[in-house]
Image 1: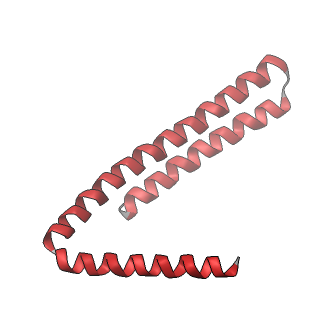
Image 2: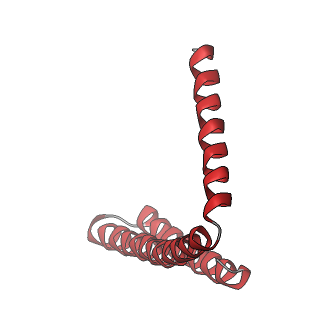
Length: 101
């Protein structure tokens, strides 16, 4: 994900969070149907934020997957060495965690 994309995503999420906060404040100040409406609007704002995050994650995952696939095809030996090192580190981490419990 590029810096500009992260900045835009951050701005969008903050906007949705501010909108949800405003609606929740409205709900706290009112009662009955008005409060229910404000909570529903806040819920929709949160859902839009989650949708935006999901869409961006899907795009980012697809790009990363394509780049990884290209790298593996270009450097198969190096990739297997790095993968082996990662597996060894994960095994070491797991053993350390198990020995601490």
